[in-house]
Length: 246
Length: 245
Image 1: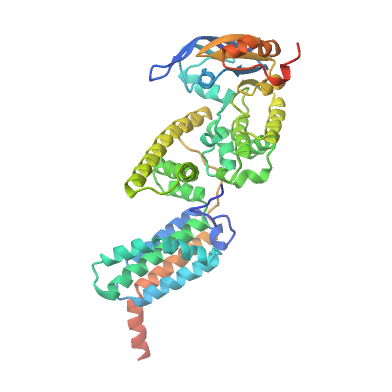
Image 2 (image 1 turned 60 degrees about the horizontal axis):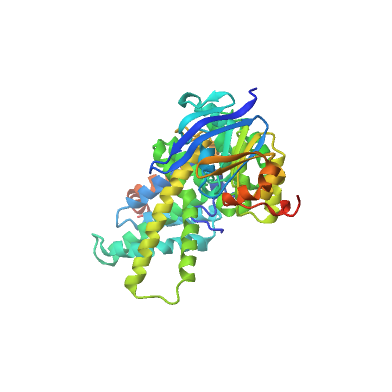
């Protein structure tokens, strides 16, 4: 079964794809934090970040519909949390909404321009604890295994079902399927551990050659820092500019 | 170079839940031999294979290439004994095929420059195209996954290979390819399988296990022909041997 979740387009060759994982992790984290910190009234900053995100999307060669589609998936959750926002009124709602959309798009670009493995390696090099990275890598790999199992369980269930029963029965069934999946996961984890031991695993996970840090990475980081700097001081800059023009 | 690749003496193993899995197993395998382990489901074949590289430890002695299993030499033992499990999904846990095949050598501290060569050779030995390297394992068919699973162990260049049901769930073509591939390997082979025709084709010696004990050990042809023995242990004489006395 072919299915791709997190990094479907991570194997392309755009300028963004060529950058090292750490660069992108740092840059995108900085951008996301910056977006979260834009003061509510600063429209210029919002425009600037949307513009930047659009440019990054373009450079990355990731299909627009994919990014939009993924963002839309989270839409209900964003709407719900927007309703609980401290800022009242349409302005407040839209601020939260825009922030969320921006952050999400940036995240999608990050994960689709960096192969998941390299992302993990970058995290490790930036100091993320080994055990966390290890678990993320298993999560990634076994997401697909679990999906296949769920699909098969569903097929098996559908083969023995004539029509959908009452809600309570359905939920009970779902409950047992989840329980079975959990148990199977435990057993699989044990077999996997045996397989790892058999291939000499002793605790630390070794990884292989990735991208190297080059001038491109430096340039990218500098560019991002510049944009953040400019937007943060954009309030002042606009004031100075209007005074100059006046 | 020891004469015996594997020497098992009075091996007993009980599962944590109390089930007796292996009882007084005595087994000697010469270097370079090809031995089949046959028996009904639940006989203890897989359990026995897991004792070869110290994943499971029972009472009794297991000597691999002359060395008794010991926590201190487990790393070296695992370099020499490659175990391939029945379900490839349990053994392919890295994001790409390349990393899975490189996992073993990396753990054995093989120098980094050497790794690509080992991966290339392992993939070539199992008859896979090099282009499969960057693909994630969930994009492969079962036959390809089974072959990658074998490659992950071959890249460690072990002296002994233990295979658990290598031909299960394979279509005839893949099965044939697998038989050819295994026939060409220089390692000492221990193969646990239900596929008796496979045993006939590859292994000169067969050991019959049932309920944790060894019931017969001898030349493949004569053992598999013994219908009384086969039927007593939930097996049957392979088709190609029937009707010829």
